[in-house]
Image 1: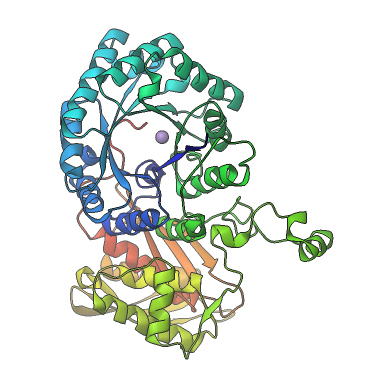
Image 2: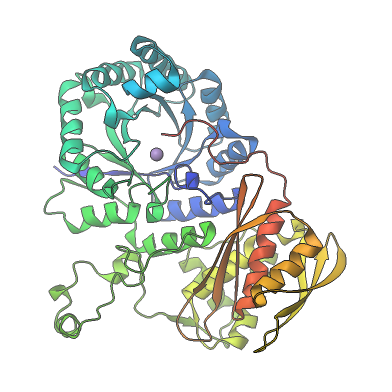
Length: 515
Ligand code: MN
């Protein structure tokens, strides 16, 4: 007997709750498409009631995604459920995920409700959601700290009311693997109608145990895991999808189930999410870190060359690391470029976007000999946003850096179609450039983060810059890539400012209570 393990990705909902990881609608759609390509079973696309933008993001994803179930989150409140249902209307397969807290501390301090009232509201919410869809998930928030007798009552009642998945979240990341596995086993044993629903888990990484707790739950009967790419998520994050999937796949001798994911898409998805959110992946991160398959010690290298299995438990190519990494160069044509984009899962809605990307590729190939997948992905992030709506464009810049002199930047921007010049001095060339840009735009925002990453190796590598700006609590990321890191910095800053100038209804991705 070999079960299917359902992978429920919540990068776009819980992942986005990481401070600073907010994404635009277009960025969410790109990630959703990459997840669909990886054959993720369920994509939690957002929290439609949170704002018109969240609603629209879920609706667009519901409209575009055909091969994954698209899920929307809703508190156990009528208006939340109605809104989620409306956003999911175009979905080929949609799921409403509703939740209410069941731990004594949450019921008493946050909801100010008696347990019986919470139970009644949970039943009501599930029944209401079932009017819209027969795919309904219920979560007792903070289950990890709830009393098991009460949890059993709630779960039995919501399954009776029509919940098809019941999800047990360790909202605050407090559980230990043996304890959490035991909780799942007991719930499945004690809830009389447990066979009518899929048991799911949702673990947080506050003690570094999100993956361990999730896997322990799987060994005790859970058949859905909620997780995020790169373990993105609030505070210390959620369980990392890539670690869950590859542990189960690698240890089929232990797990009585497996996922149906295309694991060769993992590295691709990881890079895309890192790129969009500006959260770099640490080099020693399992599966997707740059060093995850690098063997440094001579003894290990020797062993791997003689027989891979001596030190490798997985094959790098199975998770999407390419052994043949050099892909394109100056003489590569449009069709080779397009073929590579296809393999990377990048598609363009409009022909002119492809043309723009191809032109950028040619420009880059003039400056840099070998073009790697990472270069292409950064280049796409640079070009894919709809430039026609951008109010600020970089026209020209000149920056001087000289020993003993104060760095000086001259910047020309097109701002609402009008060319404007400015020059500023600064502590360094990037500082001077940002000051010159800000003196034209007058955004009033604060710079919260500035980071540069080498996309590939070598001093001709593109620098990928991420900036994070904050204005009145609205946090925005900008990205830019160029072989010149000062220009990459200017691009990233302008990208963030353009997003800031786009009106948005919300300040923070999560206005209401999260699971
Ligand atoms: Mn969560």
